[in-house]
Amino acid sequence: MTKTIENLGNNGKITRRAGLFALVASAIAIASFTAPQPSQAADKAIKVGIISGEDEDVWKAVTAEAAKNGLKIQTVVFNDYTQPNEALERGDLDANAFQHKPYLDNQIKTQGYHIVPVGYTGVWPIGLYSKKFSKIAELPQGAVIGVPNDPSNEGRALRVLEDQGVIKLKPGTGILATIADIAENPKKVKIKELDAGIVGRSVEDLDAAVVNTDWALKSGLTPANRIAQEKIADNPYRNFIAVKAGQEKEPWVKALVSSYQNDKVKAEFDKVYKGTGISAY
Image 1 (cartoon, helix red, strand yellow):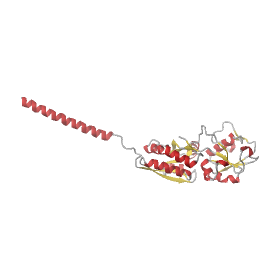
Image 2 (cartoon, one colour):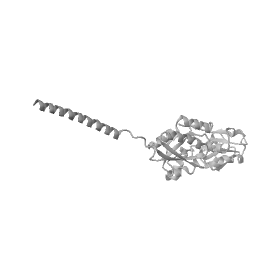
Image 3 (tube, rainbow, N blue to C red):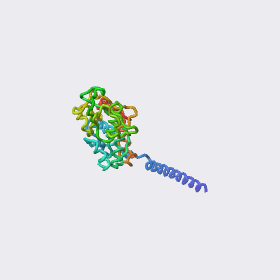
Image 4 (tube, rainbow, N blue to C red):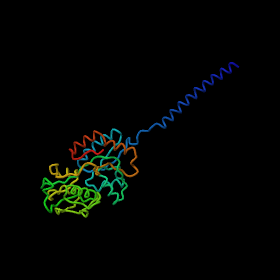
């Protein structure tokens, strides 16, 4: 009897030990199954559309930061504003970075795009440039002033002229103002609508022109040629990274945004844009 009880006791110990091993093994297996997996951004390759010029240098820094987290970025360079959203909508790009919200809102309204912003980049205060005059007050009667012809930037340019007292827009006019919304024009200035990429290069043929800062740099314009600039406070024209709707919560999107929004990229941004652009995050 004693032996039987002893044997049963030993068997009990063996069973408990085996059971303990089984529990540990199960715990390990469960932990292995439920442990957080590496981000899906790891070893992910994406294409990002940008505009040619200074931003190419900024995105080299972004690409280097992204590589540290296993996110491989291939930049696709465009020469005008009309193509990057179409390419993103078609699926030729995974993201783009070149536009502000008023521009995207108008593109969605007119083109039906399914694109959303996911992270701010910078803001480039639009300015009024001239190579003939150094002050707003010097603009003569009937001065010819160029403005970008796309809806969002034209409205933005007209706001600059209104803030400087050159024109006055109709009450309640939104950010997509057009020349038809001009209510008062005391100097009888003539507004010439030009493509955003051309207006900066046309300054010498005009009395003045409202030019997006990135195009001003490309056109060889300097702060010395700038006779007015839009307000920076509460500026609605901050640029951002954008992706297709439904993609905004993907791990690679978060990795992409953080690859831009950091001190190393900011330093490169400041170096490249020399104060004409301001980080906006």
